Amino acid sequence: MLVSIIIPVYNEGEHIEENILAIRDRSKTENVIFEFVLVDDGSADDSWQAMQRVSERLNACRLIRLSRNFGKEAAVTAGLAQAVGEACIVMDSDLQHPPEIIPEMIRLWSEEGYEVVDAVKADRGRESFLYKLFARLFYGSFNKLSGLELEGASDFKLMDRKAVDAWKAMPERATFFRGMSTWVGFRHIAIPFEVAARAGGKTKWSFRKLAGLAVGAITSFSALPLQLVTVTGLIFLIGAIVLGIETLVMWILGHAASGFTTVILLLLIIGSLLMLSLGVIGTYIAKIYDEVKARPRYIIAEEKCSARREIEK
Image 1 (cartoon, rainbow, N blue to C red):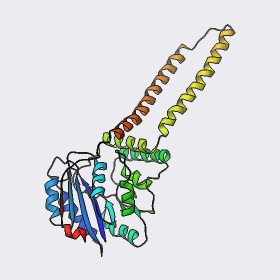
Image 2 (image 1 turned 135 degrees about the horizontal axis):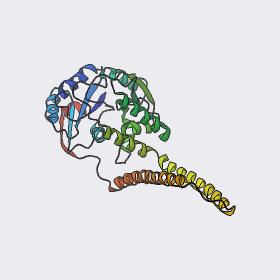
Image 3 (image 1 turned 90 degrees about the vertical axis):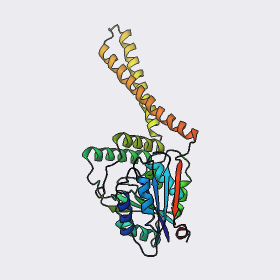
Image 4 (image 1 turned 30 degrees about the vertical axis):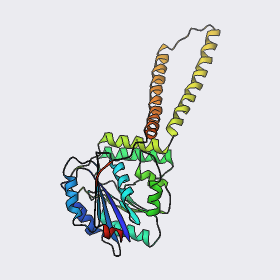
């Protein structure tokens, strides 16, 4: 069996060689040929040169270098598009996704017939309290808004060729791999793993990038925020009608109108809600704009393949 291991790489030149070799050594499985698909997501260091060196020590390897940094989601998409394995495994290059469970993932796929094997986090490792809180809020919101259960989900998963082809058939520009791989369906099974310490380097995910990913993921899978804008507008309309009737009755009875402070506060609250509502609507319009432009998800600057005969076999 040929199994493709897809690994996005970004500024990992110092450690990528030993990490890839560690993945190869720890994931060895009988009767399985591994094809490594390494995607350089526009690294600014010597990651591409290090990837070329390590490819010479692998039985089968495809190297892809993107023309600039398009982001991890685009790098995963590029890897899935180029992989030829009967199954594809997506994982990180920093060994936080333990390669020791890959043989079990392959067994569940090849022997028990599961078409998607999700590796879920038993805990969130050494992440900070704020990071864990943000993750909990995001997944809680995403699960309720989209109806997809992603608690503890990661990009570390095995997908059968049928699931990969179904994933690739979705044409949207802005991709969210975790959500899309769950949305396609098929027979899923989850296996837990402990998040290991990074094998060198620092995380490339800033709070701004995480917030952007969260907003993009929620707006890609649910239109409920737009409906919340409508519901909020209806609530304030009902309140305005009630307040208008009360004011009219008080005027007829000859009582002086009062509550200047209340009026100011209501104006401020309504104004803030209007601006937030316009922001939500603008986010969806921006996504429509990006989709209509139909620009490619990524651009490949260079591509290399070693041991092609091995891969074709």
